[in-house]
Amino acid sequence: MRLLDDVNRGSADAVQQLSTCNASRRWVDGVLAGRPYADADHLLAGADDLARTLEWDDVCEALHAHPRIGDRATGDSREAALSRHEQSSVGTADPQLRVALAEGNSAYERRFGTVFLIRAAGRGPDEMLAELQRRLGNDEPAERAEVTEQLAQITRLRLERVLGPAEEASR
Image (tube, rainbow, N blue to C red; front, side, top):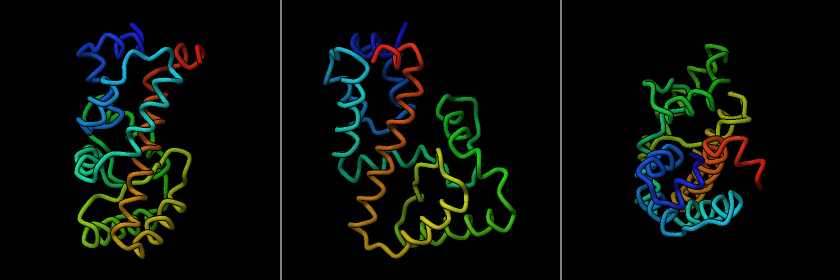
């Protein structure tokens, strides 16, 4: 059964699949509250709006499901598989760059109290490190806005992936 149909029915499988895209319970509940969706485009638009308007506590809830950049997500869950796929470029990075990412992650966590979140898909490790270093200079409100946007981008990519080619073709 397609995700769109599952979401429109409010099935338990839809809850599980949506949670792999964004672990915020408020986001999942909001997506389900917006049903029925006429098509995948309407689902994606509603999901985007919700992801960008989450309260900081909801963003933090979602962050708990994200590994550090450079850490390989373990387990066989769909979320772990998505994370491994998104961060695949880091695995082939130069060892010095991986060390710099690890040090940057630690500095970021000390500064902001959360994991550094960036849409890794489509980015190389050098670009992610440069963004990490740039964002260490942000004040807290600016960084929260960037984290929320990055979460929204990751959510969108994951939702598109979970929807799959059949539902993308219907858009």
